[in-house]
Length: 257
Image 1: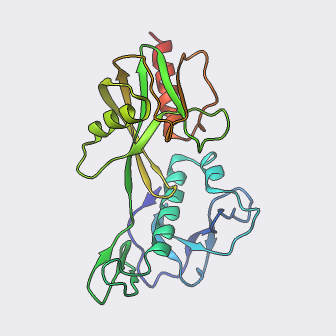
Image 2: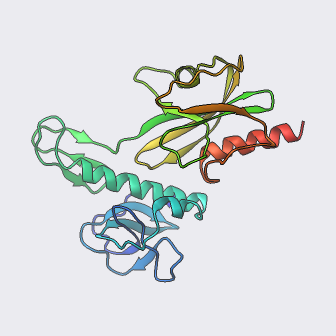
Image 3: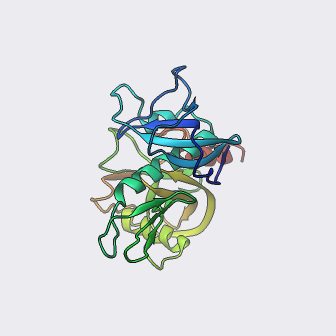
């Protein structure tokens, strides 16, 4: 389990994750996510403690054979997935925030927390987290699933979107469903949340009950949408995604009624 407390600045070794722009390096055994190093490479980013030992991440040139992060998520435990999500998000953040967004001067990384400090104007920047809603719309036992133009062929999923500034989470659910498929929803209930590091989303999952079955897709974010029964479903998202968990939870609930 990841303990989010920064190791002292003079810590020189412990667990290490190795990332590239596209992949995550396996450990020496070819299966594990991390390996122990007596001495970390220069420039590592400390993440905290993994099972009470310091853990850090480094970004390297990489190898084309390294598995992609999504491939790792399909096989990791929830605790390991959290660690990988943290590593992916903070390395992207450090890469993209080397200069101050207020005055343009170079920033420096603080070692006691995830923060980039501008010594010219004093602005301190923290990792970006983008709150999103993801919603399974239901009507009785049926589920409304949709296709984004970015999806693999034949895949359908739940509806999702970013929360707008000043917007309540439940309001975002109703707005996104209406904008994308033209369906008004009644009761909205929270399911669970999931960090989604592609690149920095926090997905908040909901169930929403449709007031009608009429669908009107927007044609941009959504290219097709339809009602599906639990017995006859299209190709679905991977099992580690919160979208799939929403679907499977609903299937289990209607099966026991």
